[in-house]
Amino acid sequence: MAVMSNIFSPAIYPPRSRIKNITFSTPSPSSLTLSLPHPYNHLVILAKEKSLCPSSLKLRCQCSKEDNVAVSTTNVVFFLLQQALPLLFQIYQHAKMSKIKPRKEQSATFDDVEGVDSAKAELLDIVMCINKHEKYMKLGAKLPRGVLLVGPPGVGKTLLARAVAGETGVPFFPVPTSQLVIYDVNIIDAVRVRDLFEAARKHSPSIIFIDEIDVIGHQTLRQLLAEMDGFEKDRSVLVIAATNRPDLLDLALMGRSWFFRKILVGKPDEDGRRKIFSLCLRDVPMEEDKETVSRLVASRTPGLVGADLKHIANMSVLLSIRRGGRVVTSDDVLQAVESTMKNDL
Image (cartoon, rainbow, N blue to C red; front, side):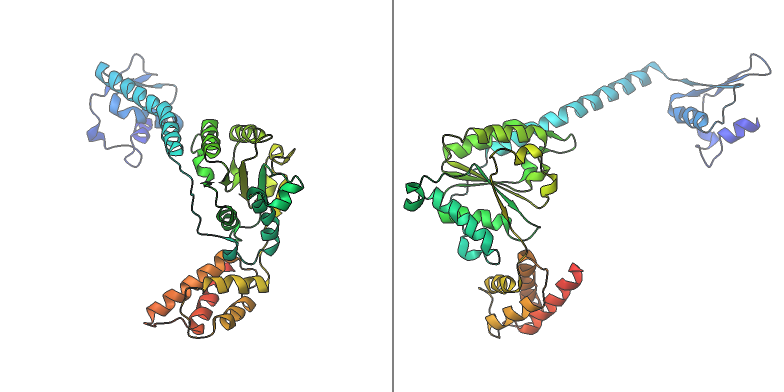
């Protein structure tokens, strides 16, 4: 009975008053059989796990026929849901992808991009090829199948891709990698890649932009390369991809000439930060001279990128609004710089 007291300890199991229909059978003085109703199956499991059941104590659960049917039905329903949810998610994502339309009008041009002069110069060649500039066509220049933008987060890779589309005036298909990946089960649906390229060909010449291409799986990668292989004769669709982790890229993606052009988009230097912040202040009413403020910010923000500088400009406006000002002052800007630099550290 000492063993039974341990098994039904209130600290582990429900009070004894809640346990009903417990029957005992003692076929011999050395053995004891304890039979529990279905709601207390967990007692049997815990007793065995904690080695509270000696060989002389046998635990048996009594389940009614109705309980067995209910448990079986619940298990079947959960199993079907587990199998059906990934398929339903695929159907939803496929329908979502099929509704994607190109952005024909881009608000960004190369005039909106600063601090990455080297990348702009290389992408200008792409723009000239798409626009079929006379001197490029005369020498037989061909549009590459793909361009890979490599650089840390926030340097303006997406903005550069939008600027290329804006300079050329062609339809732009920005595709987040999340639309090519099915979560939880980690299955990649190549059908959506085919649909994407089919839509791009219908609107050719066009540009497809894939951000964070390093997270794409093998199945989508194979389909992507197969679609890009089809550009050998008719290169009317340009694929621009971006990554901040080139070390994670699949070797197949870097082979042959799929992404022959690899453009490094680095962090801006002090002069680049000055130009970027001047752009950020373009529509901001300032009390002081904007160029002077931009130089001051550039000198105090080493290592920051375009996204950080844009955040500083926006925070400066918010600080001005909080104090009831009608214009942004240099004090607002410096306070925003100090806050951003602390967070960056």
